[in-house]
Length: 226
Image 1 (cartoon, rainbow, N blue to C red):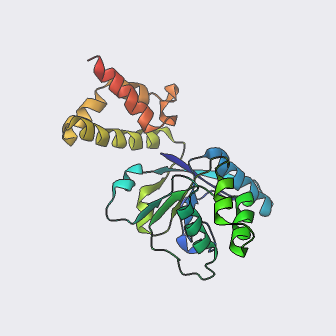
Image 2 (cartoon, helix red, strand yellow):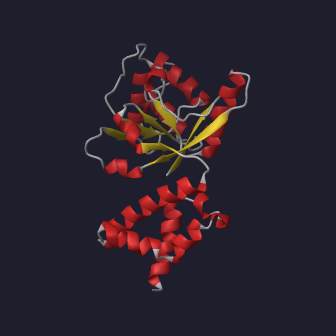
C-alpha cells in the first residue's frame, strides 16, 4: 500500500530520534494513506520553514499486520479506546514512550479534534458527548512507526520505473505463491512469461505507477483465459 509523509523536505532516511512527544500515538514516524492529508501536512510544515512542503511516498507492507513478532494496535475509527490512547500520549511530557507498541494505526486528532481533546482533558466536555461529536468527523488516517523493527515494513520509493517494476514483481510473485500454492520458481515463471509483465515492463504504458495489487488483478484476469 502506498503511504505518504508530509514535511518541509523529502524524507529518505527515517530517524526515530527526531520524533516529537505529545503526538496522538506517541513518538514515532507518521504516514497516511490519504495523499491529500499528507499534502496538507506538507503545506503547513513548509509554511513554518518558509519553503515549499514536500510529500514523500513510501510503500507499506500490509502483511505486517499478520506478523506475530511485532506488537500492533489498530483503531478502525474514533472510539473510546482511541480517545483514551490519544489522551495518554498527549499527556506524556517525557521523551520516554508512553506505550510499547511497534505500529499504531487509526484516525487523526486534527486541529479541531485536538481542541476538543483538550476540552475533554480539562473536563469541559464529557467523554460521551465528545465521542458523539466524532461520529460526524471527516475520515482521517495515520500510521505511527514507533520502533526500529517496525520500519522494516516501510520502504522509500521513487519514480524510477525500473525500481518500481522490480518491487512490484517481488510482491506479485509472493502473492502467486500464496494464492496458487506454487513454489518460487513456478511463481516466477508464471509472472515473467505473462502478457501482464510484458505490459508492465513497457515504461510507456505507465503501469509501473499503479499499485502492485492493481497489476496482480490484471494478471489474475489474464490467467483466467489461459
